[in-house]
Image (cartoon, rainbow, N blue to C red):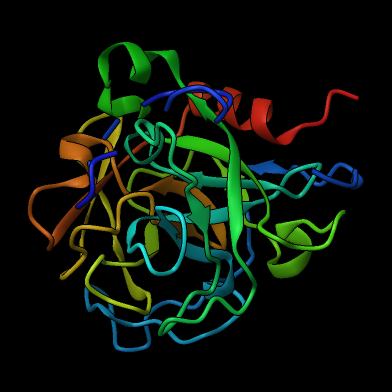
Length: 261
């Protein structure tokens, strides 16, 4: 669900439209069975509430159009990578930032970016999305660098990163964290998901309105999807969707996250 529709690209020196740094040891771990817990909503399944500021929420933040004064339009989260500089979001969030200096603010809350601002430096979007906006490919990855920060700093060192999980069960319990455009703190909701189709997953969580596109879907502490896909994440703020992560998403993730040096 995106409120601000933003062109496509792999290099933000080129165009990107629509709803650096030091080398680390290889940290990428694509998992199908993980046991790292995430904090499910304390108020129960299918209930949306303001997320508490914890280690999980610190890895999630809104995307702004240049600065904290410009308003946020989507949500992204840090995922593990060799260089520690990769975030995940929906493809329709990145497909249109032509000439704009989008920035990511992990852990953002009430006008404050406690872990700094990170400018987007590149994007990884599936050709199937670029060519036809296939909802099954509405996931993308981007690289970030500190905005005015110290040379050699990376976002994963600051807040950590989620593992990426593929081949999940049909009905996993998912925790979603996202930033509606009209709120200054993240919302959290956990619920059992169902399959809308073999390639799209559905969750019933209220109040996940415009701005929550790209929000991470966490299963056992790993990123198993992002809010997007069918109807760009859904036209009803109480029902949201995510493309099921498969080989195409895994290929994109590896291109963004794994060092070839």
